[in-house]
Length: 509
Image (cartoon, rainbow, N blue to C red; front, top):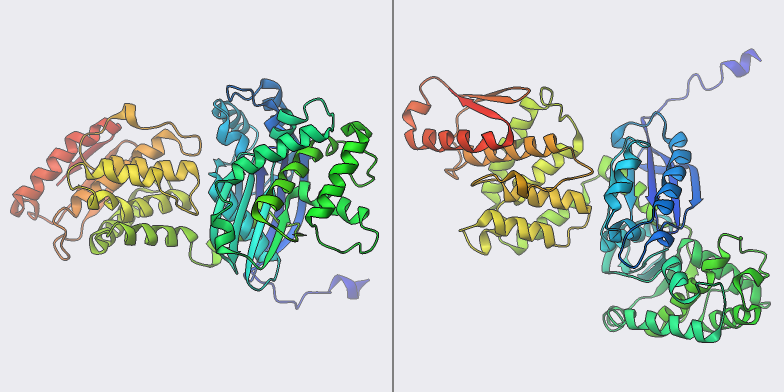
């Protein structure tokens, strides 16, 4: 026994980071807990809870209180698995239903009382990119791959090669939403299937030319819906239980469903009672995809959105952030003055380091957002120098920026919008992921960084100190330096007046 107690004493331990990703989906909530060791991801724990959140969306786009409560109850169960996690080690993403729900903020605010982590409502294209990342990191394929993920409210289509995506699309057709629309009473009729397939093919007209033109070598399906369909197709194929999905097998499965007549009468051993009501809708969407995109075969992959989130967290910890590529692409497209962007970035980071403790903004995400806004605040200059702050805000709000969720992108836009000119508090949006006070303080830091680099030249600005307390900033320059720069001093004096709108006082000496 003594020998065992000394076991592993000489084993060299490497640094590890424990992370978690929660996918608040329209059909199910999925939690994945992993650890990152030497740049590799090891999955430790998974939790899946069926919620059918999309079932609570009414025709006006409001989420019912019953659905909200189902979701909150599930989060309470999941919270037990997240106890002790640091804020930067947990990422929660929400998809179609919370993108569409007009009262999504009600759910998010209540959820923050259960889970002390931000909930990111991600755009459909960002969801698609993360899904592909999960597949790419867990499947070794050569050549282009068409990945399809059927969720509760939307279906994502991605063509990628290696770890890079070529085409991304998210279409509003899912197994829960289509069940409500075409199979509401559980009846499985050929006419209902045909209506669902036809409507899905109408949605697919948005991509049925572009995607085949790009082409793919293999096709991969993800999500629980495609997993069940894959198993059922194999069970109907006596010749080869390892064969991929094809259109003939899907149509045989459709005929078997119609023969049963009702979802309750389905006698498939591999279909759980929770999955049966939404099987027909998922099958109709997949048949439509096979027909419109002329897919010959599909194999199933268990990796999906939550794995993509985990692998991206690993990349952000050990490799350059994908948001860097997004920012570089935007800077190239709009001919950003790179030298000026870097000047403002350097100053913004210096200001942040000086006040992060006093202002309680010591957070990697706050620092990153401030940095990206410093680099991209003049992206609208190519449109017109007059109103550059408004043009920049519009571009940042409406561009496709992989790596940024909706609130991160909106905050970037807000910082750019108020990096100069008058501050209108009524036009600053309310955020769920970022506290209002944090937003106001980041605006203040970006404005000061911009004004300190107003001459757009290197070597002009001397060394300076910034002292911060709760609501006050003091900029301290070398003795008599400001007296020799009357125009620069006048610019700073004007900024002192403007910045008071943020509830912050600024003094200079």
